[in-house]
Length: 167
Image (cartoon, rainbow, N blue to C red):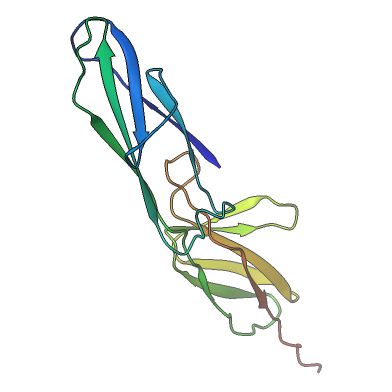
């Protein structure tokens, strides 16, 4: 789950006495100035990754004199996760560069055997090969630290090296 906090900031009026929150027009048992939101991520059954969904939060504030504000709404959109497409690279000669074409996401990473993420510049990953190599690639919709980063499933592709002719 991806945690998010929605918080109200009062513009004017007397000190608030209570807060009343709703989620998709259903009252929530929250009475403070903020509500903690657990957004579904790729592993949550609520979000199957193949579609987007939206949640609408509302809050009303009642002050110590009994005056209640109009309800203010926050809409949280969760986009579907990217689906990476990998074009199988052509076989290359030993010491030649393989080119893996990528589509379907905004950013891509090659997952190294030890788990490190190697960023891909643009929609191509290039590497010089001397033997066959398996690549694990994942796409994301935003870079780490940016809000709303959704990860794709990991795709695997094998780049093959031709047998060099013997003279």
